[in-house]
Length: 356
Image 1: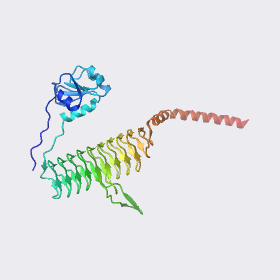
Image 2 (image 1 turned 120 degrees about the vertical axis):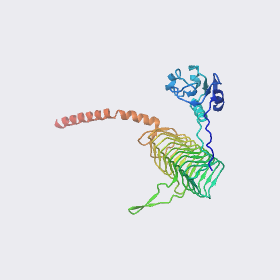
Image 3 (image 1 turned 180 degrees about the vertical axis):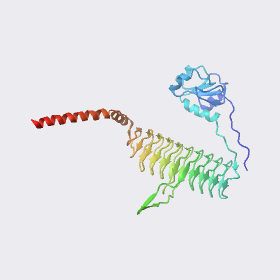
Image 4 (image 1 turned 45 degrees about the vertical axis):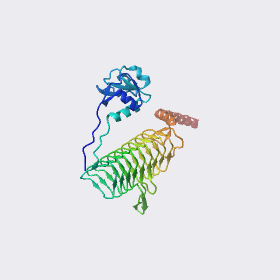
């Protein structure tokens, strides 16, 4: 049965304790107590703000925050108690997690949930209202299945993984430990496999799985198709934004981050530690090497052989080539007018020569 809701820690922390927990260097009064994060502009007493972008440096002098997180270069620009780090945004992220932990639902199975008797649930599992768990599914310790979420037959969900409301994990799929699946995400639906049969299409059964590694995040309404024969694989520490489509048999390398509305066609291999900007479109049956960055709305139609930064809504180019092309395109109207004038003059000269 459902127990009492788990308490959410929203208490004050001393700056000294936050410095120790985040790995930052404390400058000033470590006894200052904060309970929330805030922006430099809108923070109030009890808040800790951060400066990572030089654009916001003028706000540092006027902030009403009780403490700030800054880089060594900015540490002398304020008298406020401060945490100093070469990576202030990373320190902010760690502190925000400490001060604003996610609410934990109570362990147990809600009376309206449906859990097959053949499913195996670990210690401290929470299955929310109207959620369903299929036969032979295995849920590790501390797994959270949110309201209306579904875990299919034979699926495997690792320890402390969380499925938010109406997330779906289809039959046989595997999720590692500490994975976050946001609301409405669908993992393991059939890929777009069709064979022409005269004037009709014959659906090709998709018999692979989706295998998701540890510490991954899958954004709201993102879809990852199961493999046609082999598995679709999302390696450890991959971060996927909202409304991404990953087609069947893709492989996404560890540590890669992909922004919203990206579409990746089938059987594409994306390397480790890649960064892909929003609305990029990537064709199928190609590969992208480790450490590659694709700018927003970039179109990739063929394999990229060397890592680097690539941009462009026309077929992908190396970043330096793309900048040169863009500069030339801005001069296109003027060049067309010059060519038209030259052609007109040439025709006039040709007519005059023919008349002599």
